[in-house]
Length: 560
Figure 1: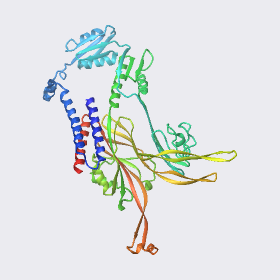
Figure 2: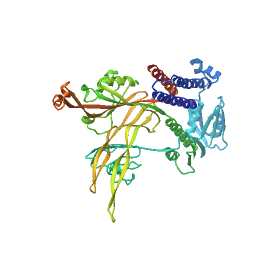
Figure 3: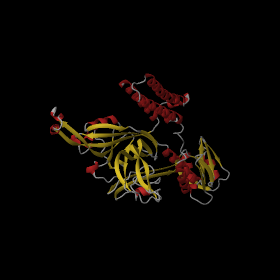
Figure 4: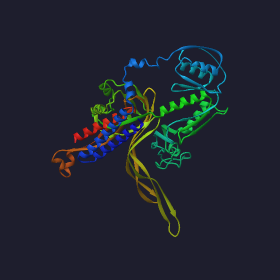
């Protein structure tokens, strides 16, 4: 099944790439469409074949038997009995325990001690579990054979499938007064004339990144003015190092106990007592189940140019009522903002899986433009980052070097720094056992433009192309169920457009035409809306994704 899942993932990637290539053509290439459909058909057929051939005929026949037949199996009819023992030698106790059962039991020659129990109406497995927990014996079952080992130190090697890597990530959102706001990033924060930087690299200078560890120079001393509020989120993952420390805490130390972890081989060798080995084994099994959970994150980042009737922002009450009430759970985005100027960044979820319906409802309140449609798969508690845009270099620092000799010469030193312009989205999911998903979401839309500044140095004037950034971002933690649409709204922007009109003919007369013209500035308000739909990857998830891609391909081809 794992090989089938990987094959289906590759098929989805292949067909998505084909669709992107077809988007660049002026007309749909019928041959390319046919090849894409064949790839999808091959992926789904391969999955069906694997399912059909994975079980023998006799096993499938047994699975098709009526429920009453399976319910009367020998497993459910395991006999129950009562046990009374007082100071019975352990070897004799185990030897007599299976006399009237269909199981065989082998006792290790080093098993010693005596057992006292009084159990009523229990099965063999229940009795062995009780004795194992109370007296510390190591009881293992393989098929119909039980093996009993002494309650002493034992060595066992356990496996855990996980990548050998260390990941670090950092996000920061700042609101400042009397200075330029710092923009956080993955491993660096842009500041303005940072003075610190001792822990995060060199100090930021005119927006220069402050360092790989978050840039204290860009964070704390890198802003001219007082900081209004700051939200910093940092994640660091070194699983194998934490695993060895956790296992050592489970089994304890001293008395010959030891833990040896081999990240390259994915093995953990533990020497401990049987009950401690069982606790470590249960922990590793639970950890692997949690680590292997993954979720497909599908996002829509849209910008709504609001109509005249909705200049205060999108009316989410109308949208909630239109889709049947949705959920009444609201989560503040975690940013201390002025709601009147920024629209109040809030996040909430709707019990709907339809992106298109949400877009249609938004279009009733303004003109909707889809800025990006990113999609990514992330594992449990691992940050997924999507970045779409471009980097452009701007002047961030200017200095002069003066050489005095027979003639004094000054040489300007100009430092350039790349500034990002585009859309960035980082999401960290946490998937619980009951299918509830907790998301740490940080979307950011940055528009960087050039503005010229005249700087005079040593009586020389320089015209510098500096960067001017317009940033809309949010940082929120929200809970949702599988397939729900999470919405983050309220990120508003105000701009002004120059409009002019004139009286026909008269407005074109040179000189006098100005009397018949009208000019005004129109205020335009736009709101950024981020919609995110998490889907937990299950048994049939990739098959469903293939079918969705096939339907999208057909609709695209028919529409062109």
